[in-house]
Image 1 (cartoon, rainbow, N blue to C red):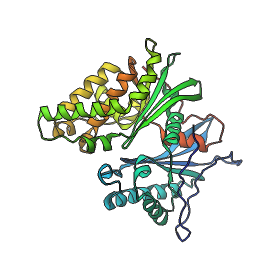
Image 2 (image 1 turned 60 degrees about the vertical axis):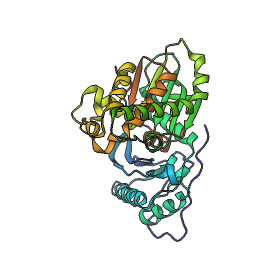
Image 3 (image 1 turned 90 degrees about the vertical axis):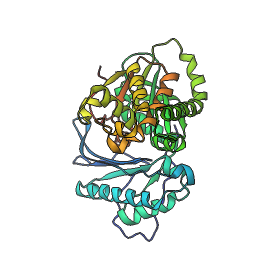
Amino acid sequence: MATPTGCVRPPKTAAKKKIRTGGDIRPLASAKPRTYGAIDLGTNNCRLLIARPKDGELVVIDAFSRIVRLGEGLHHNNEISAAAMDRTVAALAICADKLRRRNVDLSRAVATEACRRASNAQHLADRVYAETGIYLDIITAAEEARLAVLGCHNLMEPGNGPALIFDIGGGSTELMHVDINKHDVVIRDWVSAPWGVVSLTEHAPVAEDSLEARRASYAHMRDVTRQAFAEFAARAQRHSGKKLRLLGTSGTVTTLASVFLDLPRYDRRAVDGVSVPAQAMRDISRRLAEASLPDRAEIACIGRERADLVVAGCAILESIMDLWPAERVGVADRGIREGILRTLAMAGRDIPVTRREFRK
């Protein structure tokens, strides 16, 4: 996989206290455990994890997540709006405060598809540094895929069959065919498609509030994602007839797993590592796609913040299950942030964020 690129250089005149971030990470010798921080600024969410090594693993000591909708409107004008910038800077200011309060020794903040596409991403990066002290590293799709795999591969269903990890984001979706051996993972093939829950929702809006219009919009979403995955799907045909394994890391799969489990509220402990029958995922996807926006908003673990975007995620998920027809879908409430933490904590060593592995 490619090494991180696109690191945004901070302006020389910035006056805020710097937060130390990493590019090329080397092992750090210290008498006491170091504290690490990871920020994932996506097209829809801003997420932070802070962790510290203990007994051969990284233990999360603080976390933060906020929906910022950084990519709102980006599909139409290729720019991050002023309102989205304001929301994002406000969220990153909270992250910066947590990093300082926790005395984080080393951290990394990455931005993904929205910043890769936006013509004014540098302006956002400069403002973030000036107002929060955080260096924003706009990473390639290859680095995004690598970090996602590092963060969640230990939740893959055991076995020898071909394994696929997918990450449905706000502005893009990554598919990674991987080989896994205990804590070691190798990416054999991968693709990044420019469709995520935000970009696809804006591309295929529902024309009117009717069942027929909702079905038409969903069918269009399925066609768009099917075409985006076509070349990867053709290569995946060589695995036809084999016992396939499938693992997803994204708000889409964790939300649908919550619906499958009929949780009254989101519970990471119940969702992270669970396995859901693929047909159940399809049934839930179709039900959500046909439901009205108010009806989706009333479903526990979806709510108003996710009700408008979850349908696009369902369309992408169904297209993935079409090209990789595994019997079950593994669910990971972990990904890029955990991949960052593992990279920061002693380069070259395998330190899982938690010991939990695949569960039925």
